[in-house]
Length: 448
Image (tube, rainbow, N blue to C red; front, side):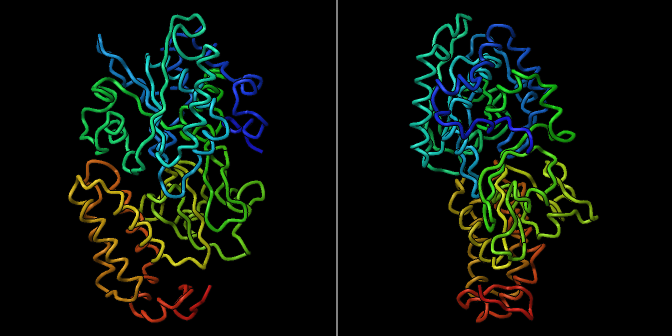
C-alpha cells in the first residue's frame, strides 16, 4: 500500500464531523501556520513540495500563489474550484462528501498564506447534497473558532462561503467560474489580465482545485521536502484517480505518482483488471477532454517504455502517441466498446456545454457532433473522416478557453488511433448499426 495523504482517514466512522476529524489530527496545520509561520513561509513550503494543480492543468501550485499581485488597498481572494463536471471525474465529490473538513482546513491555511480574508468554494450545481455537507462542516468550524474573527487569537480573520453553480461545465474554467461567482453569465475572460492580477471583483485572486487545496495541510504539517520525496521527478506527492468504465473494481484511488500503469489497471489493490475477463481495448486516462489511447500505447510508449502514472510519462510522445493525466478521470474500455459511438457521445457533451462565445468552438463542436452522428448511424461518407480531423484542427488553439481544445482532442485522437473502425462504419452501415454490433476487426464482427 502506498502513502495516503488525502484518504488515510476517509473511512473512519464520523470523520465528516469536527469532533472525529480533530481526533485524527485535523486542523493542526491551521494551528501551526497561524501561530508559528508567516504567510510567506507557508507559500515557500508549498513551493518546495512541488505540488501541481490537480484539476487538470498540472501547473505548480506554489508558483501560482507567488504570482498573486499585492496592490495596496485591495482585498485578495482564494476561490476553490469544486465545479467537477468533467465526464469520468468524481474524486473531488468523494473528498467533499466523506471528509469535508480536509477541504475547509486547506482553505483556511491557504487563505492565510495568500492574505485572503474572504474565500469561496464554488461547487457544481448538481451536488446540492454535498453543498449541505460542506455548510454543516463550515458551521462547525466557525463554532470552534477556526473561522471568523481573530482565529485562534492570531489576529487573522477569515470568512468562508459555499456558492453553487448552475450546472455549466464551462464554469470549471477559472475565469468563467469567476464571472459566474460575480453573478454574470459564465463566459471565459480573455487573458491577460490573469486572475492573480485581476480576478474576483477585479482583485488579485487564486483559483485552485479541491484536491490541490486539501493537500496543503499535510504539506504544512510535514514540510514541503517530505511531500517532494513522494512521487517521481516533477510529479510529486499523491494523486486521486476516478477509475470507471469496464473495470472489476471501479472507484476513487489515491496513488503515489510514479505507480506503473499496468499495476494500477490490473492489480487487485487497485482496479483489478478488465471486467468479465474481456480484452482491454482503450483508455481515457484523465477525463473526457484528453486524447484516447489504444491499450498497447497506454501500457507502453511507442518506443516500448512501460508507462507510469505521472504527468510526464503519460504525455510522452505528445498527442501522436501520448495523452494527459489531466483531472484523473480514468475510463477503461473493453473490446465491446464502439469507439465511434463513444466519440460521438463526447462530442454531444462538448457541443451542449460550449458557451458559444468563440466561433470555432460554437460552430466546430456542432459540426463534429453532426458528422459523428452521421457515421455512427450509417449515413457517413469516407470524406467525413478527414472532415472530422480538419474541423478539430480549426478549433484547437483558436478559442479563449481550453473547452475548444478539450472537444477537439478526443475526436482527433480517436480518428488517429482507430481510423479503421471509422472506415468500417462507413463501408458497412448495415452491420455497424445492427443492435449490439461492435467492431473488432474487419473479419471479426462481434455482437456484445
